[in-house]
Length: 221
Image (tube, rainbow, N blue to C red; front, side, top):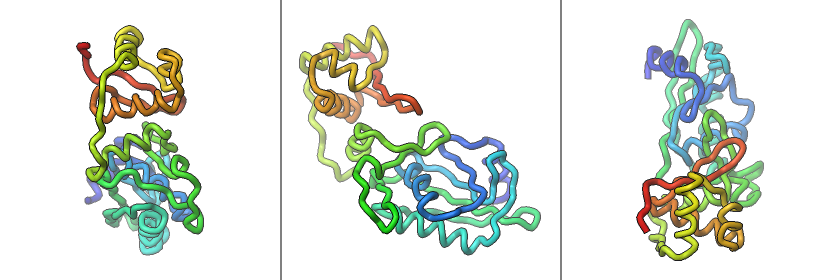
């Protein structure tokens, strides 16, 4: 990573796989971002870069790197292994932290003093340019992506057929809408939708306001 590469990243602006940080105030705060990147598609965090893309540099690259490693190792379960480089610019230093998409999803956030604050509240993902808490459906899907996860069986019954028909006409559906459609509990509706995502039949979409499911391709049934 050289200065030209850093400038290209800054020019792209913050997004799904890129975040700017002026500095690190505590490892707990940055840990959520690192975890979200590992749980999603990976990406970069540039330290010493303001929200508007201006390079301000870090006060001490050594202290910044120590905080990044603490965030990645001490506040994530399993730990994350960041790739860190220091890029100088006009007497200032930018710390570039690259997080690979994890093969051991989901990564959980360990709160202050490593307190377990509940499964769903400890999993973060990237949504557009933000770090957000994952829903229980997303947590289940992340677990199913783990190579050690057992295979998930799928069967197509009346509930699934009604779901496919609904999606052909309306394009999207939420957990609650599916539950009402076929008169089942939200919990059971969630399980069915998660299985269909895992099998590749459905896609899950998350934004800041809602979460919904769509067909991955045309279904013949």
